[in-house]
Image 1 (cartoon, rainbow, N blue to C red):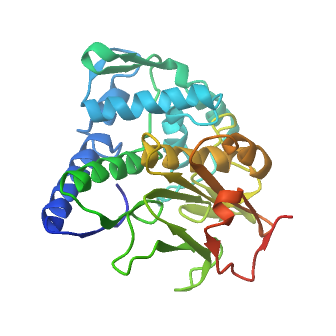
Image 2: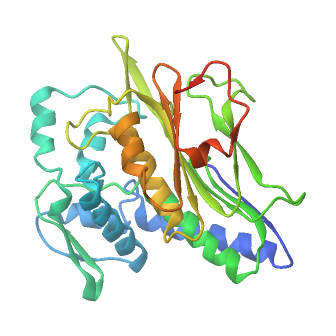
Length: 314
């Protein structure tokens, strides 16, 4: 999953739950990683424009859910940006700003409508040669949901599922009977213990996206890993970071929270809040480039200890 995973569980079957969960996460990583040449995702990408590839039901579910959400968001979320991710190579020693012509050519292969699904045998095909999908914005959230199922099977009533702080789920209350207090990353500080603020969650999923996770700066401009599927460039929407909280009784809460952080980041503060508005069980926080924090009322009710570097929008 390209991150540090931390699992906490309390109960008679806690060790079994954690061990089984790590095994499941490892399996999902082997299936969904585009860096693994033997993964289902790599096989789909290698067969682009040629033929269908039968994949594990978990991978099929991720891709199907992602495509459905691409339709719902009018393409603001699109896993076919894999070719763009590969072009920029942000986070590697080869990261660079692509040539305009090179980027324009790659953009011709970015379109979620060209993901072809065959549900009867869990097969996937990319319609055009050279296309590439990337499940980096959905696999961690899916893994959170899978670990939740394992925790439930082992009767875990208190625990924290943490996929590198960007995707997590709080099971019940802490051992002290309180909600889980999660420190939200200060998007411009790496000082240990310095947070944007604290968010309290209980039986809820929490996901965060930020332009500080993988980036480089060239000629004074920050180029980060969250791409706008419409432009092929890192999203330039006036956002430094955003967080989504989703109630646990919302279907696919982990996967949905993972996706929504990217959608909101690309849309920007006003459009992002408007997109979230009316979604049952979903709350949102957005940190603007100028330090202004935008929140839904539900998020504000669980937010505290705001860092003095920021201010809440009126």
